[in-house]
Image (cartoon, one colour):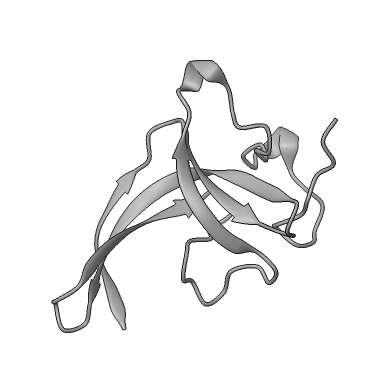
Length: 105
């Protein structure tokens, strides 16, 4: 079992990309970085937790999504084209799966 050693907020521009189908990906902003340590204290890793509460290797991630990678885009360049806006009062999604493909326009 791993334990959290440290948590730091993620700077704007970091995204976690998830593969939903062979042709569709979805990016969510990373909210925080967590330093995890193995129970024996030997191995450590950093994971980004996205705004939907998912991270690579979590047991309760939404079914059907596979983590691809983290990516950084300068805030001035805008979000990736497959980015989902962060949840907020004005942008709440209806109940349902967190990882949903969106048709490109």
